[in-house]
Image 1 (cartoon, rainbow, N blue to C red):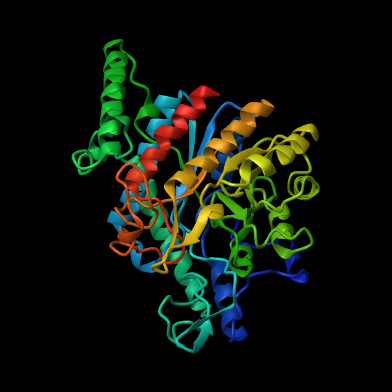
Image 2 (spheres, helix red, strand yellow):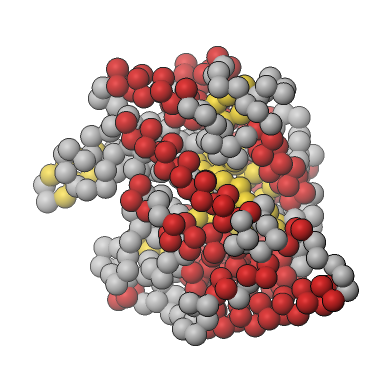
Amino acid sequence: MTVNAETHAGGHTWQSLPAAQQPDWPDQAALRDAIAELESYPPLVFAGECDALRHRLGAVARGEAFLLQGGDCAEAFDAVGADQIRNKLKTLLQMGAVLTYAGSVPVVKVGRIAGQYSKPRSKPTETRDGVTLPTYRGDSVNGFEFTEEARIPDPQRLKRMYQASASTLNLVRAFTTGGYADLRQVHAWNQDFVKSSPSGQRYEALAREIDRALNFMNACGVDPEEFKTVEFFSSHEALILDYESALTRTDSRTGDLYDVSGHMVWIGERTRQLDGAHIEFASKIRNPVGVKLGPTTTPEEALTLIDRIDPNREPGRLTFITRMGADKIRDKLPNLVEKVTASGAQVVWVCDPMHGNTFEAASGHKTRRFDDVLDEVKGFFEVHKELGTHPGGIHVELTGDDVTECVGGGDEIFVDDLHQRYETACDPRLNRSQSLDLAFLVAEMYRDQ
């Protein structure tokens, strides 16, 4: 499972094509130096781990498993602490337990974590009180503070992204294999939460059922090793191509190229141009790849994406992450799914119910209604049930903290509450209670399939 340190020319074919959403680096020499240093760094993940995820996603594509993908909208360098990482992981583990037990389905767990430091933006600049500065593109590029100095793109930040991702992955690996993720911990994941939250109390009831099942198996002499650790993978948007290609390596076992910045990468709605650099880059690497599909996506575009990224029609290679909006999902998704299914391709269909449902509150905060998020997921399941295809998973922006960024949910956050703990650097995230609410509702929908 070793990966050579050498980069490969095949990973740079994107450089002759137009690349959307790239920073306007003012110092090209500094950028070259940063890239050269990144090329000498060891891999963050191994090729064999990427292969394992591709096989797990193959089971999802065949209708045998469900993908849970979630995490921060945009990670921040000042949030690479044990508490933040543990809380995020704890929320995903709880959601995974709910989906596995209540939905009776194996769950593939993938975090938007250890690399989600870059964000595409709708405008290159931002104006406040008559002052115009470059827009914030994530901690990998520039600073969040609205000052001229902070907003200058700085390639040294690409090296900080690598170090922050390495620190995060190190802790995630320790948590998932060092006993914290043992299924016997289902109560411990919830101690600080159960008294104050309806979803926490509902989760605790499920945890007691899991306990009884484990005790029964133990009494029968069954104690599987699989219950003691969790397989957990990392993913992020492959946005800054200089960074991604600097971390693309040749696998010593096969000679194939892998982007060793994360197990899975995805191409966003704003960068999936068929003749663009991002799709070209994705076509060259062996990692599992996702592509975000918005409501304007045509079946012809989807089929061309399959031809470019998954020409061998390999289950698990390509994931389509649909982000239609609650008001469009039932109209726009059926034609895409029908045409792709008819082509014989076995892609993973995943619902991103976040990005199509953002609006601006009167207070100026970007937010999302939990009911809209839930309705898009319902529409996603309805379409697949109607067509007899597999609703493969959900892709959500969430945090393990008790933020007030999305309105609604069991704990009922109101628009007037948004200012209380609005902490995101970019898009609004579900908090821990809302995330668990969603997991229970998705498990019910899955059972109804």
